[in-house]
Figure 1 (cartoon, rainbow, N blue to C red):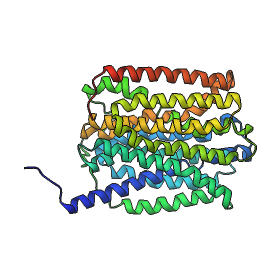
Figure 2: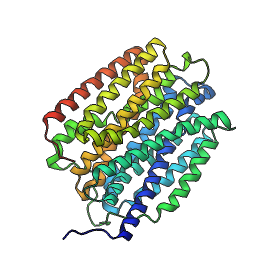
Figure 3: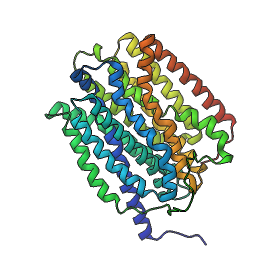
Amino acid sequence: MLRTESPVSVRVRDRDVAILALGLFVVSYGTNVSTPFLVLYKERLGLGPSETMAIFVVYVAGILSTLLVVGPLSDRFGRRPVVLPMVAASSVGSVVMIFGRDEFLLLLLGRFLLGVASGGALGVGSAWLQELFGHGNEQRAAVTTTLVSFGGFGIGPPISGLFHWLLPAPLVLPFVLHVVITLATFVGMLGVRETRRPSPSSRLRISLGVPDEARRPFFFVIVPAAIWVFAFPSTGFALFPVLVSESIDGGDVAVAAVAGALTAFAGLAARPLVARIGSRQALPVGMAMGLAGYVCGAIAFSAGVWPLVLLAAPLVGGASGTLTVGCLSLLGAMAENERRGALTSTFYLLAYPGMAMPLIITTIGAGISISSALVIVTAVCSVCALVVTGVSRSQTLIPV
């Protein structure tokens, strides 16, 4: 006889999923509030290209400082003790950004704190959401995580752009808004059900969480795809608008805001695409989309045709969303419950360094040229796309 959930338990589960998803949304939103203002920080503080990109990329250092430990910690002590403090830390990061608008080091600290919050909340929150949905709903949980995170990433730039256009103090009020909604969401999350029974007597150790039987598809399919999950969009909304800003006759903040919105919201298109083609095929398709976006962005800069940046943005954003859903769906099927937090955090540990891609490109470009750096990175991306495509077709993966 099949066991079904009672209407009450379904309502409780759906409520918990909605509140947790909202928490992931506001953390994601907070990470991109400052992105359109990079050009303002550059002008206000007299920063060079690499210093400007450092404001964006130091976020990655915050993420990496947490991802190796938060997964195993949540597997031992539970999801709530990790995710709730990280959501609160997101609001603290925005407060520091307000005070740092005239101080480069404070801007770096604020972005670092936002990275810490994002790494902890999204890495463990994704595992928590998977468990709230329950076994057999891996793709549904992956799609939900992608929708709320990319929705949050996407709503930040246009809201900031509107504040800049319509209201005073654009380097203050957007961050105040984020602080208010984050704290309100935090209160609501206090009632979300824990899904991982704490086991404080178990040994705490750093672990990637990869099951032995899944090592080949993980290292030869997930890894070369995951490293581009954020490399694609960070270049699309943080680097390309800055590179072409000098060829824009006014409205550079608006172009940056639109590029950020297009990049993030294009990730939402992953839901119907992955549902149609399946998680396994999503990875080669996502890599191809990202590669096309890089080519458009490189041409936009080299030829001085800034509108191409707005074509590159949805390509790299769609690529990121498609890769995220595909990877999380496959990992959801691979994961063992006692190591789910570690495995999900490992995915983000692989993905988030891609946020440093704008700084990598400008650093390489300082030694040769930005155009040459873009060509080199695009070539590396091509190799990864070939590996992911070839191995996905030949390697038997865990079906989802």
